[in-house]
Image: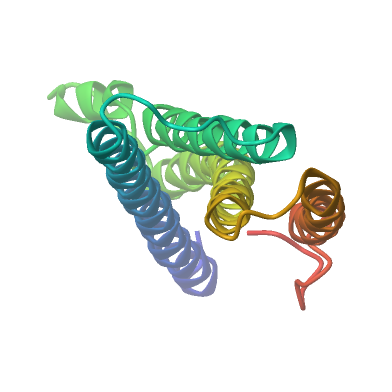
Length: 207
């Protein structure tokens, strides 16, 4: 193997290794964000239950039932928050990635009678890194998509919960509550579609 070829292969190994480490860092960052979202939703659900419990006690167990659109908005908000938490948990649990070389090359290199040429060894390392990069790329794409669903569900859930509280506190009539809910649903649908389709991205190619 010529010195130029050797240097090129070693440079490729170094670049692939750095790219692999960067992929692992991205996966870990997605996991941390998913963990933060899960905790945030847990706090939101706990706060909602606390408010309902306090309102129930203040009114001696008697709370005037809200109109139907408020119930619909509240139920949709709770469902979306739970969906967001579910997507975050799945994102966190599915983060399995490839790192470096597997155990077989290590066992071979550890054998005293095993002789391998440097070029063959470097090409084997490059092949393993290339395989790992491909697998990790798929993990990043899937986890990014799931986390995007989690964020969209969180945004929509908070929005519907907020409108249900505003309509309830403002004692809005049933007719106008339906109007507000329909307008909000259309806006939420457009924003969700805009985010999930990735139209806001400046680059078409994903990681």
